[in-house]
Length: 291
Length: 257
Ligand SMILES: Nc1ncnc2c1ncn2[C@@H]1O[C@H](COP(=O)(O)OP(=O)(O)O)[C@@H](O)[C@H]1O
Ligand SMILES: [Mg+2]
Image (cartoon, rainbow over all chains, first blue to last red; front, side):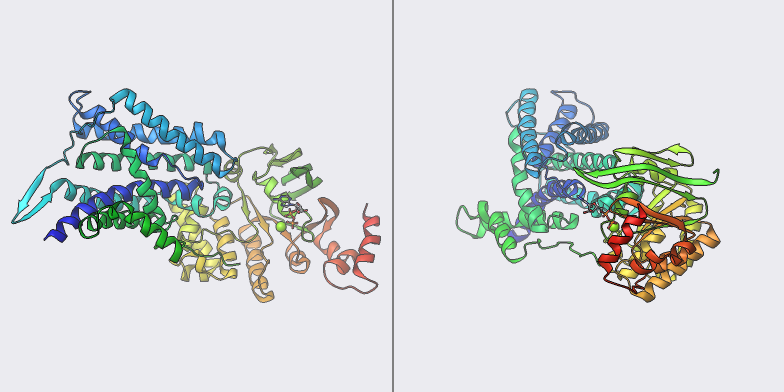
């Protein structure tokens, strides 16, 4: 019973890590840049929702606010690519990394200025409290988080398989030059990927804030999500989600069954093990081009 | 002439300080196959990249149906009807054959017509129909080349720029692919600009030809005339009769200029 409890709370955390990791991988695959602000994106998405929904701020009904949040975060992602990242286009990877790290600072600062640094809780319809089944305490929010993540995964999958835009995003990430040859406006598609990463971050943020308190430093879990993305194989979307789930599940079990302190390093120990024994990640999509 | 589809005038393209195209002029008439022959490093790929907007020329004009398309973004060039089938196929490796073909029609939205064109591609390349749900990265080199050509056809282009379709293929496969290109030209009226090192197959397919060396056009004429020219015979068709290749090449180069 206890195992089930640990598993569910671990999976729920893992869903949030997985969705942030998904953002990392989406942007990396499309633009070969690593957006180290992805965790802060998540935090920003949560705060934007909180600012719109909570009664002490704007008090808009959650389901009305949701599309607004997606539009705001999507447009923000798109503009970031257009204004900030195009400015460092052609520079080294290091420049891009520094820019995105700086971006994280800016987001944390701005959020702190607008909404303060105190922990707050989002009025989320997913924050459902606990239920007791026999001697098992189930966090309903955790279950809701898992369900929403499953739905989000299916929607994303459909988007990539069935829509022209999704197919073009895959094409541009697999062979950018060939995408140009096909008349795909690669730059615009990359902007749309940033928009999508913004929306996914918003979903992750809402899920995160449904499970507990939110403050501007919440974005630091992006580091764990980054480890998750690497564990999953940085180029694979399903791998990112699975990596997130693995990291999420390891934590509570390590906390319960290993000596104190181990749970904090467990994800990184796994990361190092994966890098040593399967450097392309657990679920890498590597297929060499035939000549 | 009124039926000139594509005209290049005094084109100059650089890689940084390296001048890869040194004042090239040529024309492609509607419905014809024009080949550009040249050894490795002559500048053939650069020429095609400049036409399709992947690279910007320093000087010169590219006229397509009379419009100056020089400096256009690649996707605008594609929309105008110029499709570039790149060197080394460049398929989307993790997407299926069918998805690759669908991306060829990215700039179009007429669903029924797209489906018709896909059937046409499958008709010309039956192996692609057989492999339609297979990932393109798992196809053989020849099949990938067929897919790259088929994907280009999906755009229903006014002109196809083909960059060394024979590269890395066996003579038999090369023959097969060139036979299909010939049918596409004769039956569907596809205009082609074909860049090749393999002069024998290229001249057999082409109506007209140019010879490129070190970024310049050094010779031009009908394919028949080129095929019978002594220079072509000795340097590109391997009918080397007298003396060392390098020496002869050096002497001949003088007469070209
Ligand atoms: N990316 C590049 N950077 C610098 N020089 C290049 C590059 N690509 C090609 N070149 C040079 O430009 C010239 C023409 O190359 P290319 O167009 O690829 O020739 P071809 O297709 O006829 O083999 C060559 O001298 C080659 O070394
Ligand atoms: Mg070449």
